[in-house]
Amino acid sequence: MMSEPDDYLRAVEATLFVAETPLTPAEIRLHVGEAGDLSATLQALSDHYAGRGVNLVERAGRWHFQTAPDLAHILRREKDEQRKLSRAAMETLAIIAYHEPVSRAEIEAIRGVQVAKGTLDVLMEAGWVRPAGRREVPGRPLIYATTVEFLTHFGLSSRRDLPGIEDLRAAGLLDPVDLALEGMADQSVVENDAEDA
Image (cartoon, rainbow, N blue to C red):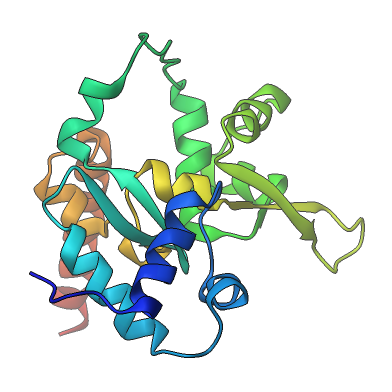
């Protein structure tokens, strides 16, 4: 539990409370000045709000208050129409998240099929993918990357928090075909090692 808060801590808390969008530390300093240790203050506020109805969280270097995940259902006034992403959209989003920045041609090479224009449009409309410039190669193809909204929606602090192959296997999220192909590849390596011996 925090002791009596000082004026700097209260100013940081108030700034974050009224902010319409998540703020970087530099943006917070524009409002509260340089009078205190901002990192320690943000950590103290984060600790103070942990386990409460709202939490102070950091996503991609930006800080904001959000409803505690276990209480979000209480605050919904109307049922959100949830659009389920197609398998193609999910695969495309995963490729962008794990390989960003990536061009449409690179996405197609990884997936092994063409990417429909509508697939990227749906992901950009959801606010999870954004154009990230152009690759400096002939034709200068547009490249895509994930957004802060993507991190926020999936509860990630950064892309480093994306699950690895072992996490996916442990959660049972790998396609049985993927597991079979991986097993065949492992068997092939063992056989080749045996032949070389």
